[in-house]
Length: 480
Ligand code: NAD
Image (cartoon, rainbow, N blue to C red):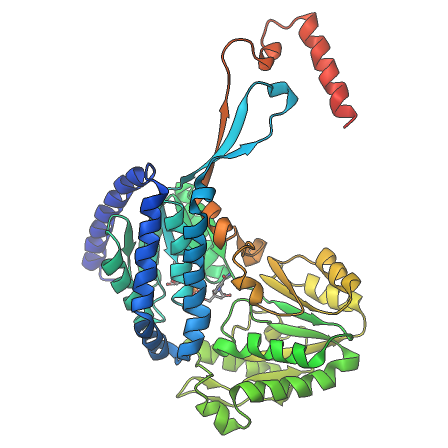
């Protein structure tokens, strides 16, 4: 950014940040009604602008309108509805039990808004991943700055229009732009930063947050494994794998990144996976190319990154079971299934985030678990098996942000479950009540009564009587 433009940008930003900070103090005292009204206005805008959102997403990367409805809009509308229905309950003080040493007191947790929150979002589900967290932030009573991804400019400018049409600018602001704008925003003393994106940028965000000791939610990525045992319904497994991997052209943080399958059923599974992928997107190369159900890689940079990963894997000895065809001019990559992929290849070390699926085989569950545990903890892990002992063993012996048994990816849409990663795949949880909590400070409140209180026993001067009580309390703890 030119220095003069940068300085005027910072002045404007600082001014609106001050007005957001002032408004945030007012929002703290608001009733649930005002928050609900705000959520209803957002819902109405989405319903009225459904086709504009579909068009913007198509213009950015040729996403099918029905996919936009199903994966971008429906979950946001469901989040809004869930928040509206439950907000009074979520906002009510939550009583907690009183320990014996505090008899006479009462305690509760009262959620209060964090203040002014920054939401930085990625391009792969550009509406959902920006407006979804906004719903939780508004339900929790915050003022918000949105920074949508610059890589999906049509959706980004639509979010800007939505912000202007729906919200008072002292409650929700939208700032468009790339990394330098994002870094300008990160200098401001936000109370909470909700970031969805890559691990590398997640670290930049967390370092910047440390300067102001802002709390963070980091929704990151990683390599999500799918472990398939030999006792599964193979057709269902293939169908569920095909949709979760190739929808959005594989550009999904919770898409299965690689398959680990019992070697006894690997060939049969690959045949069925090819059949199911063809049934969904096209039965020959030309059909795939023209399929309206198959979107495109978002930009040249990501196209080249994926193409390099693919070329290197093939040079390292990987065999192509399906696909491999690419077209740089239209940023098209055919759904690609690879076998005999070297575990040390870059494809098995980096998050793929595209329509390339390595299928690795295992002889025993021990081997599969060891491969998963050799990687950083993933955002999601998928287990396909009819046997509870297999399901439980994998859950117990691995760590992941979330897990899905006998399906992949659909746990994202269950808003009664917390969604998020662990360590390198993320910090903090979102969706539904967990999203509300994430954007709230859970204030701990203890109310004491007047006159004699049990806690007085521990006041100085310390007598023989207080020491006897202390010994009795220690004995009590010993026997619990
Ligand atoms: P990204 O990290 O490149 O960008 C995300 C956001 O950060 C964008 O708004 C971008 O403008 C901003 N940004 C980029 N560089 C920056 C910098 N140096 N300083 C400050 N801000 C910067 O991620 P992406 O390519 O947009 O998204 C893909 C990644 O997001 C994948 O790793 C994927 O797994 C992850 N992801 C995670 C989830 C989840 O819910 N956990 C969901 C979707 C995507």
